Length: 167
Picture 1 (spheres, rainbow, N blue to C red):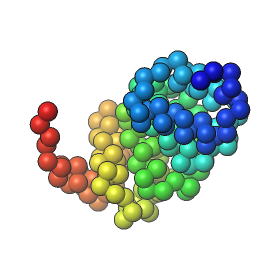
Picture 2: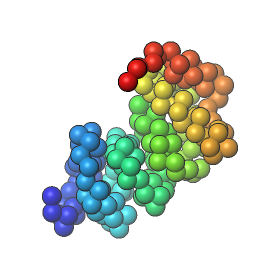
Picture 3: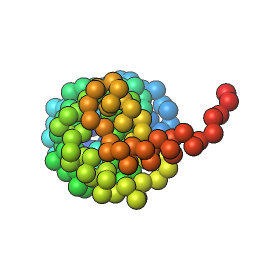
Picture 4: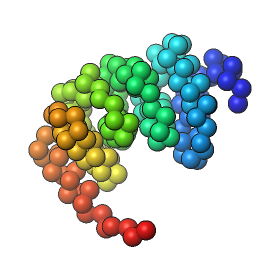
């Protein structure tokens, strides 16, 4: 891909492209660097919907190309549209910031916790596992408030219920 064409990408196309690279485990740091610069320097982030935002930060964290400036901008965007995220997207956001080890207090606050509690019955097994990892990171690494007790306990029970895989 020629990087000078990124300004022609719609928000969804950009998000889908970085998601595809990450899903395929295609190592292309210069591409992610250019996409990161494009998002930071343009106004395309304003056009991201919840799925696009969740997929984009997931792709950057999954490829170990997370950037604090980008993630801070994405956290602000996510915080302003927190009610638009479904249960899976909330879990992805949480897991992504934990994996990237980037704190986002403007996103991970009482509004985020309430959004999680409101969709608790919609979480899938993987969502609970991701939230448990976020909760551990949040409470042990960041020394901040995590999930409420009931949700935290449910996440823990689901997390430890998985049988260990021997490699």
